[in-house]
Length: 106
Image (tube, rainbow, N blue to C red; front, side, top):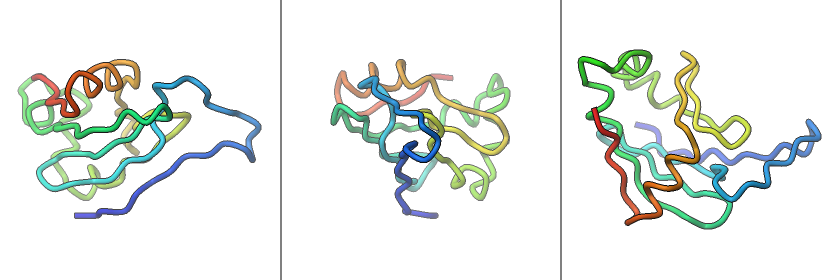
């Protein structure tokens, strides 16, 4: 698995993400987990395994392919994958802010 960190800046596009819940960096961890840091310093781990392997995974089901899961990137402060899947940054910020770890429910 990749452990590269993706950091987002939009200076060249003229767009500046200023909301504190924007994702600043993400690192792929083993077992369908991500380490994320928000612009306001809130940081934690997001475990996506229950969602990805759920019968109701929808667009997230294709992330079972580790190669695709590892292609997570940050677009305008949002965790996004090439298949169009993304995570609501407000929800993510709220959940990891409660205790530093979030296991996304099925």
